[in-house]
Length: 129
Image (cartoon, rainbow, N blue to C red; front, side):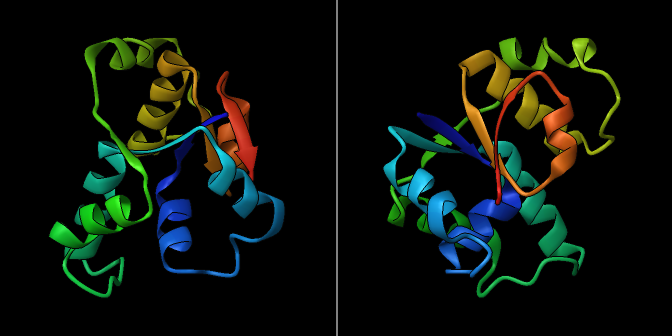
């Protein structure tokens, strides 16, 4: 299995949050490859500087260091992923999540998320249970 972590799941996972437990944690730890999209770094950085996301340190270099420390690969935003945007219905207005869906579709990834709205898209979802 190849996973793409939603931003909140990444932050909970690296922070040892109890919401990431049991089979969900096992799926992340036993995946063939785990990715964090650059769009998640972008989202977390914006929210941090708006005062909406507390982090233990400023996002750069903390997010990258945490990603590397946990063996998570970086997934860049590419044109072929963005090309899926016009095909998506407007179930979710969050532009960051919509790009994650596009990346999952393009690269054949399963999204690890607690957001039930993402299940309405044609991407594979690993729901937080």
